[in-house]
Amino acid sequence: MKKKRWIFISTLIVVLFASGMTVHAAAGGRTVWNRDNTIHKTVGAFTYHAYTSAKGDQAWIYRIDIDKKKKHTALSIPEKLDGKTVTILGWDWEEKEYSDLMVSIFGQIAEPYHLADASGETVREIKKLKLPDTVEIIEPTAFSGMDSIQSLEVPKNVRSIHEDAFYGCDKLKNVKLPAALTSLHTSAFRDCPKLTGMTISSQNKKYRIKNKCIITKKDKSLIYSFASGRQLNIPEGVKRIKQFALNNCRARTVHIPSSVTKIETYAFHEPYGYQSGTIQNVTISAQNKVYARDGQCIYNKKDKSLSVAVVDENGDIYLSDQIEKLTEEYSIVNYKTWDEHMRNVVFPASLRTVVVPGFSELSGAENVYFKGTTPPEVFGVRPELASLPIFTNIYVPKESFQVYKKWYKKYDCYSCVWEWHTF
Image (cartoon, rainbow, N blue to C red):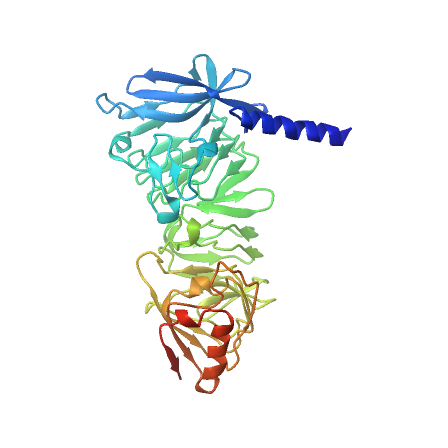
């Protein structure tokens, strides 16, 4: 009986998509939306375009057009359109054509992969934004590039704020989060350089804020920090630092407490593999049982894998002799990939294992040095990724020159080396 019910539901979903409908989580659980039945309504300088739910009780505003000839310094989105309650705001992802292009609710193009938000002259004139209390979901890049808003009160019923929802809001200083919020993407407020004030309802069951860090109550994960100034002390008790959690942190030094047991991949990075360039140093409690620092590196004590590498003032990284393994689960700080290059990266003789793409984030240097007489073993080779450092000068021990050349030829990377040198 269960199998038949599942087949029926799967078939129904296929039919809905084929008929111009889509399923989206909104008020009351899963909601069916009819793309073929739309509302177009003008209020002042703003024209709202919305889908309607199959039941006819809800509206999803996917686009707002602005009449530049009319005053539009303040936007107050209505709670209802043609009697239908507005529950979702933002671009319809089902209409997405290109993987690296996004669209704001104002129709402005955003390219998060290329550090381009959805700012524009007309949108920039909006200085005040009020969202309706009926909204439950704010879609990706919905309000990206709103460069003039300074404060935001997220409506009381919002449950989900997706990635890059407020990406690149340059003047945004204060945000108030509601009790209903259960899903906040770590990049929702990415590249908001003046955002130093966030509060959250004391009634929120999932998140709390301490030391300018948003932390999950249940598993004690740091998901976002809006700290600035000399140093951020991640609160004691935090167990996990989530991917991209420190993407908007403006503190120069970050201190990791003894309680942290997991630092996720790119925890200190902006999304899409870029480093923020603001954090200059990372320290860690001597009482931490999982991680330790040696030289410029924070490493996992158990498997001796790299977790954080700090570029020095000369643009160099000397990996610690404690490092035996490289995976992609590390971050680089004090380095901006989009406007500068590392000068030298030195891999220690202790390096034994590399899991592709373990070398990738450390390949953006003018010179790469391998101190070991034997190259490390490489695992997890992928045809779409370079297995070894490329587009750089390679330095190896004189006695191992031919061994390293053979190693590079094995992984089809030999032709991508600028010059070979020995020491």
